[in-house]
Length: 262
Image (cartoon, rainbow, N blue to C red; front, side, top):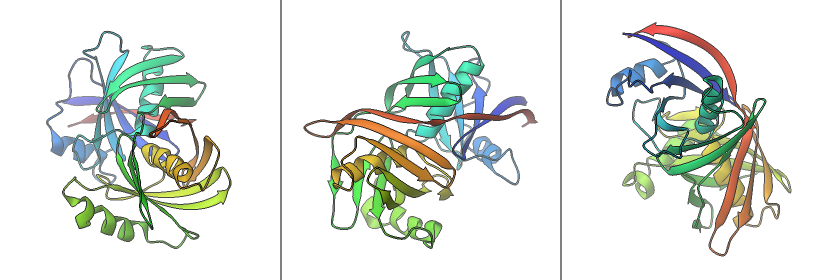
């Protein structure tokens, strides 16, 4: 089978995009997805995303996301933003979109290379003595520290990801965060499914912004997040029980198009 693919990246978080409206690629082929994402034996990416027709007639398309390990996964914020850019390239949308992902319906806007994605409401944030935990479409463990430069993200992230606390729930993503100013934070993220640090994580920075507000490390409802791959922003509204109207914004960029025989 000859497969046409597209590569997109959002602040260094890179994805293989496939127009699967004709069901060319089977969603059950875990080994193929893993091979395509392999950086030495395949195309190379943090994940693979299928753009498909949605069962909901109000949607413009449907998002199906796979981690680099080949398994279908929970929501990916940067992946969703890149998929919106891909949908515009395909002529499916113009300046706005509505689509369904594994965690429900999302809205988005796109202007030039900047894509803003509406995330799900967050109704609960667990605040512990030395970390916070919340689900922003994917589960995130958030640790605030004065120094993230020297942390072995892969080692320390894996220890938390595979700890007894999270193992029964398929693990968690782990974010190490350094406050920079009242409304700016530096973030490094260990992603489950990739099993390593990624240059950026959309659901991760969303979790960091909400955790920073919850723990009174910021009083701003619009937060800048510096990742190794670039800058993202998250804005939100505080509700009685949590957060709503949560928007993740940043660049989503086409990298290249190719064909692969598989």
